[in-house]
Image (cartoon, rainbow, N blue to C red; front, side):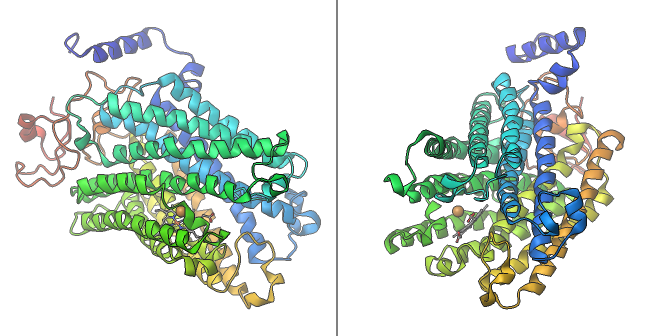
Length: 592
Ligand code: HEM
Ligand SMILES: [Cu+2]
């Protein structure tokens, strides 16, 4: 197919040819690359390193919460400032709370999914050669380490990291030391980067789909990432405005949020949660897309209710802007407004339940291959149900007045946002690793990693609901100082020990990831016999993605165990024309 292709295909070949003749320097190729796949891997690896930092902070928090008041001479030797006199310093504890939340929500989950997987999957799965704006794409990645640097720098300034939590509520955040300003700058830069990324994802999905790839044939991963980018377009600016206003308050003499100067502290909560609730869906929607894809491919069964899956994602995207008040039931809002937010909150449970039903129906009577990827996808469904049910409890304002700011809420959002999204990331890594790096991960280690993580999650976060019911507040350094809590020591021991198991299990993953990257067995093009376009490209795909013309799409992506197919054909990839089907054979490899 030398010269018969579309202009884009020919142009793609031209750049590829230039490639071969003038090899790019290491810097252009791996550091300041405009290749969406390299950017994806940069995002993914950076976010995983941040997850390790955030996880380490969580372990330190559990050291304190498991045994408050105890002295840790060894930890003092390693971190003398954090463990002054052997006991954890309370200011350090609250700094760790803030940075753990910030790192996990922004620097890990949002970036791994909307930076890593969005970059890797959108062009490949729609049959494009790259993003619409590759240079903007590179810039949006490089803003990420800058943002990280600002946030981490706060540990080293006078007063240390801010102790206001990832929500940075005023008036405390007005009074906090300089670290708070660094935090605000960091978040602002990151939001700007995500906006640039989102514009790329939306434009690419709308304009760069290959021949035959209608919107109704898009894999659910692409639909999810597309809906996520749309949410970001409206959510991120609210937080950017809030950050700027708070920076002005802190260093510019304004009083937007400061009642002393006529400002309104509740305004911060509105701006934050107008961003904040959509943000939780920004994290969970891409994970939902990944899970749908993995369940179908490893279950050898079409996704149940494709149109309902797309519809409910778009409904969730829209409704996510109407529920932010459920974070503010106790802020003194009128009962009427509280009831309105209750109705919208319970309404958003409906599309979530539809999706859950569809996943269960996809699993039901499937020919599930129990791989690390599919275990994580099934685990996601479990975590999503557990966390979703407690969300419905919290959505009732009268109940929430008791539970608000207790460990019940911490349990709720760690199940549904923390752990479920984490499982989406793991399912995605185990599933797409062969395409990303051209090698296979070790399945056995993957399964051990899954079971330890799954049990570790339930052991860590399930008991938190009982702590919340007992009245234990969140963001508390020394629960042992409060008699009304009764005996919560045992639960806190259990939680801390489970958390350490959970943390240790991640070392298995880190080993598997880095070992397999260099030493894993070589992967073929389509090791899972999947249908989406990325599996038609070489593993890993070259710059420009397709070794010849762009693929042409003939059908939807979920033709697994097709009914009228010839004997022995258990799946029909999107790129296979009808007549080639018969010769495709059992593993449906490219018929050429
Ligand atoms: C689908 C993904 C969901 C995610 C990622 C998520 C995430 C979160 C997060 C992060 C918080 C805590 C915010 C904070 O106080 O710092 C939270 C609180 C809350 N969630 Fe969810 N949630 C989800 C689903 C739901 C559902 C389905 C409902 C209700 C049907 C719900 C109802 C609530 C309520 C009412 C609160 C406020 C609790 C309080 O602060 O007192 N959530 N959620
Ligand atoms: Cu919310």
